[in-house]
Length: 67
Ligand SMILES: [Zn+2]
Image (tube, rainbow, N blue to C red; front, side, top):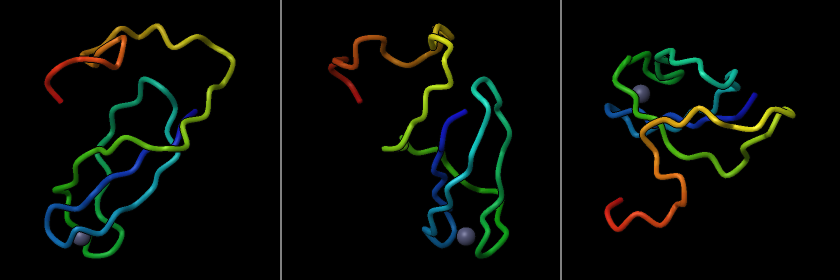
C-alpha cells in the first residue's frame, strides 16, 4: 500500500489517502466534498514487499524531459 495525496481543484485542499497499489478510485475532497481532485506524487510511498512492476504511464527512470 502507498500513500497518495490528492489536491482539490476547487479549494486547493490536499488530502492524503492510503491506497492499495493498482487501485484507481477517485477521492472527494474532505474539506469541500468536491470530486474534482488530482493525484499528487507522495513523498511517503510505502513499498509492501512486491516489486512495483505495474509499468504504467509514468516514466520508469524518472528522468523524462517533460514533466
Ligand atoms: Zn475542496
